[in-house]
Image (cartoon, rainbow, N blue to C red; front, side, top):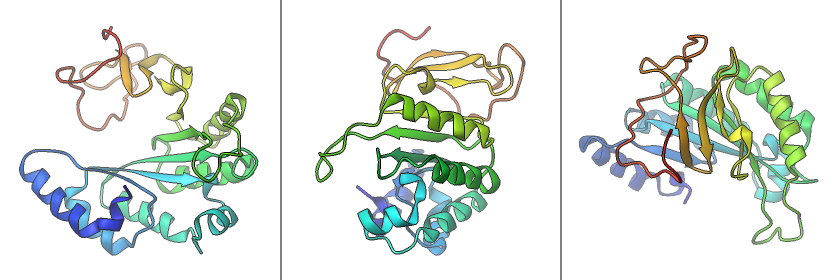
Length: 223
């Protein structure tokens, strides 16, 4: 499902989708060239770039056979230049990919190169396929990673793969008002003004696009 593997097909599809008024998003490992990013940029509205082990080079060499993680950072910088909406995820793998020092480095890099408002998702690992001997990530580890990322300057940090956790939600970075309440991929409550501001302190919230209730599936009635 990595879109860069079938880049030509993804590009052709993205062009057609834009002609029909649709939006295009990549969920990608980010391992592509800046030239590829520039080519698809006019048709790519958003990208989620997935890290594992907080981008630790040794982790990538050992478990993904990736000789260098630098191309991922180069891709992110090019996406930023091209105006593509970026979100970053990091799979927190117990014991082999849960270093808080490495995570802090990644969070600081995001802050310095992509901006403090870049959404950063900390994902819980689940034992599957070739890593069934590793336990699921402990919630307290994810919460520690959340605090590390917030201290690094990131305003919108989330915990993922833990449905119902309070850090699935979006909070105002200025006054901590609950803005978007979620359960998994569903939105339970939308608490942002029409002009994308916090209803409590009036801080501008950098939402990309507009929210439409019509045609969206909610796990329970929206408030």
